[in-house]
Length: 139
Length: 139
Length: 139
Length: 139
Image 1 (cartoon, rainbow over the protein chains, first blue to last red):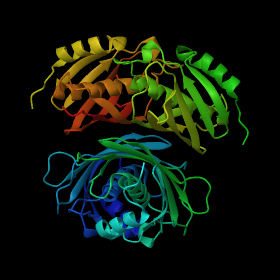
Image 2: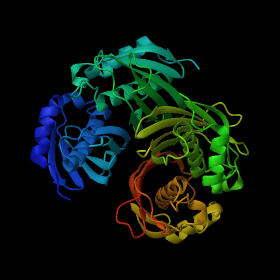
Image 3: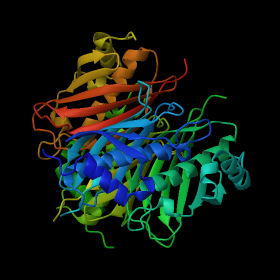
Image 4: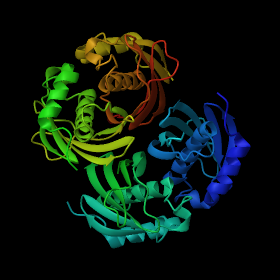
């Protein structure tokens, strides 16, 4: 399996199409069936007590899963998230970036399935777990 | 069942504890086991093509479900989201606010379960469906 | 919206295609976007203490959601469950049948989404909540 | 972390408490934070065409996750499944046993979270993915 987009192409796509989150996400590692994405935690991601908000962790899981699908199907396909199940398991460490490690479990003609673990930098146990489904439109 | 917080108290709590989303959410209706919350869609919630982003819809479902739990257990309890399953079913209408209609399905000693439908103002069919679980810490 | 299969046709389909669960499920009510299905609880569905097992409740939710999809798309389509999220909220009453009330939230070309509440006969509060997605193959 | 129950103790517990599924499940591997369980596929687990039914795969995921929790907390605790999200990704091979590989992601005082992949013997790609939450009653 050859990737249709590498990390540079994916970053370019994010910058162009998701300008509102420009710079939030950095692809640290990319292989055909797995990806690692870092999120710099900014003030707008925080909740009282310094916890990263649920929507911010959801956004990280969603972008990460989207990128590994995109890497495989290319930039033209308009994949959309159809389902996400997410478990928040631990409080992220204050002031630490988050890292999302995702696996592409299925890449079908119509659906892709990805699962992911989110870690707080410097903590061994994951802070969240997510699984996501993307609908891939017919070409 | 008497509510421990009414809409005014809940708005005050949101303004104080969730200052980053101040003004985004308006409680339109509140009863012991159901709630309706409106979200004004701002530029930062959008994706290319004018669609509301997944994280923005997740945030609306999460805040709405949190508020109906809080209304029942009061402001001191530090309930945290432990799980969310969300289905994105249709594209929200451009330039329309979103409305989240949620039901409190269970309020136990340790766990609360809420389900929700999200509508785009002016569209009859829901754009998303979510179910959420909150852990309620021992008092 | 006219149904492509009524309750009699759906029962016939179940008897023929799902002979292993023959007689377990009875359609009590059917409309274009909702359905009510009863499950007679047998010994093989029980867990110690007389509780209905999780897999038995999953099966009820899955069959119920499948039937409302089938009622709308007809018997030839080979819809398959792609995702289910289920919350077990209360212990079913011993010796009571279960009733599943489901709504068809989306019927798209490729995906259908259904949500459901499961009740124990004679209890007002639902024992479980489920949402399910079905992939509908191209015709 | 020392296990409170080993594979022999877990098998004994299953035989006694879950007599209806006696012999269906075999623990192939057990470590403090992971477990592998095999399910012999019988006629009652099948759907037309030889596919293993959704409820049968759900049951395998549920038993597997339950066993790794039980191995850690011991036989007296009455853990109950509170949530399961499951994705059915591929058709299991006909006439093959299923293998469920699960990880214990969190073991808290009140909640445990497990995720799992289900494989059809002899197929490299997983047929299903599940995540499950168990409520652990206070001791």
